[in-house]
Image 1 (cartoon, rainbow, N blue to C red):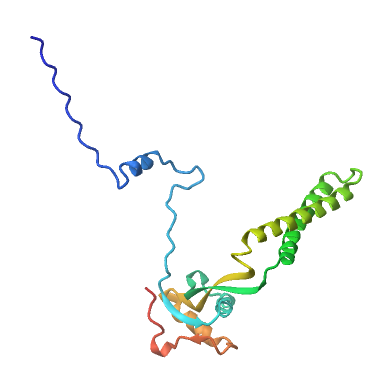
Image 2 (image 1 turned 60 degrees about the vertical axis):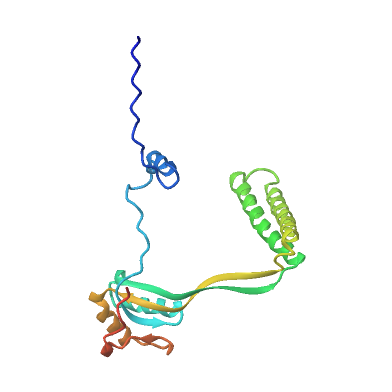
Length: 212
């Protein structure tokens, strides 16, 4: 009788990731970028410190930081924190075929002028170089206007207006490291505050509570 070969031992199951081992394989194949320094990027975090002043607009907060800079304050300890962010879209007008053509033609004109300048710079002595540059500008304006009309015709039923978008905050706070918060507060209070909408923290109350 021939000896029966022993069955191969079962290999222990390798624990797989959430996606059936795909994430494990991807982790093994991932290589660092040659342009990276080998360190993981820092995640953005809210600054910790004391609120020394609060303003209604970003311009007021920027002017306060400028006053600290002029007073030789260590501004690396200062952060501007915007609260209650809102996305605002301001409607500027109704979009028509004429406006679509004009906006597209203006964009195409800029590109055509750029191409014409390149021709002039690289071939200044070529005959008719100015005519070529002018033709490039006109062709760019024509194609840009045509593209604007086609784009508007494709989205006319969806969006018939022009607008601008911005993200603004309801208030802006100056957050300073606790070690230098009192000096920053004193500098801001001693400076000339012309806008009455800027509210400074009262040092008698110990300032605003630290930001966590």
